[in-house]
Structures are given as structure tokens and as C-alpha cells.
Image (cartoon, rainbow, N blue to C red; front, side):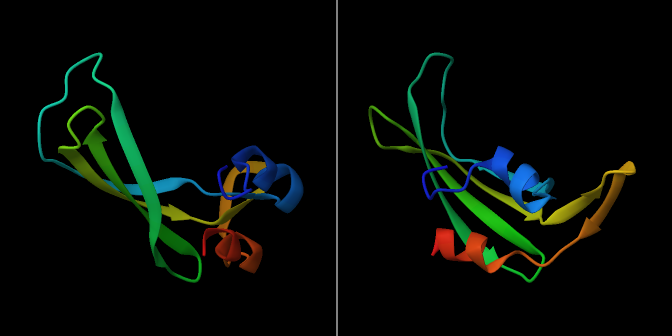
Length: 100
């Protein structure tokens, strides 16, 4: 959303969704319920139909690293006649440009 791309608009305007297909998290330090954390996210890799989002999670008070994560998302079109049928699509240039 911070780059002008609203997830809910992807489906209504472009007919696309970006489901999560893989997630890897490495825990680096402790965090407790109620701790304030900061999450810094960026696109780490672009494929033609998929991309990876890299997250760095830190303790807001100390700046200490709490976790690192990488998620893979795939650009898909949903068949309105068969909502469980997903077809991979090339990530549109306007989405790539928004994150550059």
C-alpha cells in the first residue's frame, strides 16, 4: 500500500491476486507478547510470474534483529466460473514499477 498498490484493487481492477506459495522464517532473537516490533519489507527477487518479498523484523526499542523472512508470491488470475482454478500470469509492469 505504501507504493500505491492496494491488494484489494488488484483483483477488482486487474483481475489478479498474489497468493503466498512459500514462506521461510529464521528466528534470530526473542520477542514477547506486547513487544513493539518494526518490519521492513522489500522485493528481493522478481521472476516473470512470481516474486519474493524479504522481511527484516527488529525490536523497536533495541533495534535488535528478531527474525528474517522470505515469502514467495505468484501472480494469478482467478477463473470467475471456477473460483478454485488459478492461472499464473506475468507480473504486470505497473506492479514492478511501483516497487522499484
